[in-house]
Amino acid sequence: MICAIIKPFKLDDVRAALAAMGIDGMTVTEVKGFGRQKGHTELYRGAEYQVDFLPKIKLEIATHSEEVERVIETILEAAGTGKIGDGKIFVYDLLQTVRIRTGERDMDAI
Image 1: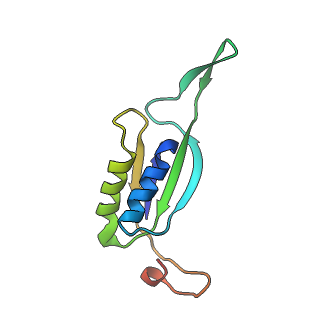
Image 2: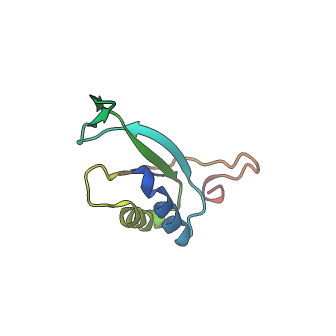
């Protein structure tokens, strides 16, 4: 399971790059958070205020173990801007997968 947190405006680039490599399914969630950048200040109607949680996109992609490195490299290339706040990629073991409609399990369900 690959979980990537990216900048919202990079979603279309990442989705297109993953589709080009054969990844045809993912879950996309709008999230808010912060890392080392600790948010930022904004000006609204002359008043300055602190924005602690920045909008991000969370992608969740279940794939075969052999594809993990290719998916990571694709996300890095498509989501990277070289600026602070580009995001993170987390990889963790997927213990079990079940397709609800058919009951298929594990790799057959992906």
